[in-house]
View 1 (cartoon, chains in turn yellow, purple):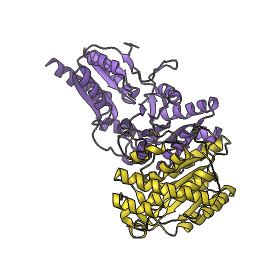
View 2 (view 1 turned 90 degrees about the horizontal axis):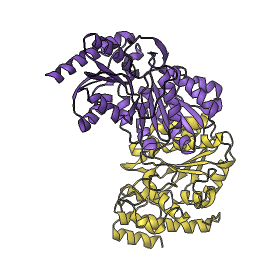
View 3 (view 1 turned 180 degrees about the horizontal axis):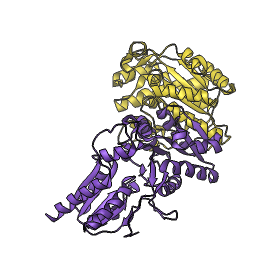
View 4 (view 1 turned 60 degrees about the vertical axis):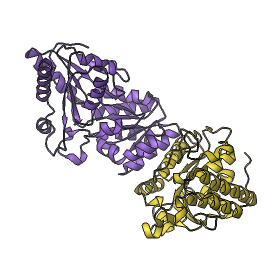
Length: 273
Length: 320
């Protein structure tokens, strides 16, 4: 794979990834488009610029680790990993079919280069922190990156992990809260409000950065700041739009977990052309 | 090892003490051994490891769910983590994490639950793990060990570290009667026949092994010849040992655990599939209460006398 820090090139990849997400979920006729589309820039910036990794050598011990806490948004992870060369691009449309490596939620039994099986919300941050602990013991430069949903952080385990990360000064761990403001049943603020996000994470002892989660240059700067931060883990509160890039999915709770029809898919692909 | 000498109860170290010491021995020879604890290190005896290897000891606070998943992350990066707490907390509060981040991706995490059963005594039912074997056995890929004394616990911890795959080891709080000589040899997945007998087989685990040895002596005096089998490995279960036990035509299974979801039903499954015979069960049917360990074992029917009664019933049914 060819990494790049050129925002324009990264934006091109992001556009391709969005098309792949919409296409594969339409093919599956089930899945979670909204939260996949909201975290496209986060994952593209990580995999194509920030992460030290090698798809040719996925077991490289000193690689950075990525954990998709919000496992239901896996179509974005599958598209990005396929774009990197970890997995076949031409099988993305087998998403959610029996026997497909692209399972409904990330499953290391089917894709060994995934770092963790996720899907039950709230566990990914702990796993990423555990990996960061191992890296520290090994004096490895490996860093852990964990993407969480803003609904996901309603899970109590997240705050157990947040305490752990700050207490153990895990400055080699970054969590990114994809704050798209919507969860399955509606708007986060109506189901179980989680704001003020920045103040919450700061009071738990994390370095926090409030960032536009769709601005690649802003994300690049934030990841750089996180890497420079010593003695504390960093939380990026990434302000995003659920369904980003597809007009009728944006900010629409319906598209948390409903697949587009074929007609909707065509319309979406035109917008993403 | 067949023996016809009478079993004498000699109190030995608690299995939790043996666990703590074994961890330190392992830590000295294997730098990948790490320990996660949830504010019970003085009770589980992982404080011994923490003292000698502070950099490899991860204090998680009173947060078992996080502890299990931290351990999963450590294991995924090549460490051999032992996550330890009271069994009631590790298994019940950490169960969902054990299911999704450990069993399902088959992560090499070791969970040691101490203070299992009702013999913890005065602390009462909230701290008494009487369903942990059932929970652990319900996780595909997990191995489940339930040592009866300090010698077998020491072996179990070393074997667990060497085994590739997730393991649950059940330990206790109380002093454990000595069952084994220090040089006893064990094998992964194998039961140990402690006494041979022709009329009934007493299959037991944990503290009930000593009670079953006592029961065998009482039965012998009544003219009933009882074998005694220690099921150190609940999963995998030693099928050959159970088939041999079934050849007596009568089996009693005894455990400090809920009777309708523990060792007994697992043995019954093997018996039903291989060699049906009469079976009786000694175990718990509900939550206990505060009390002395001895008083509770008496009241809740986990004594040699209860095993004897069950064996008499089994033999009578077999003969009827």
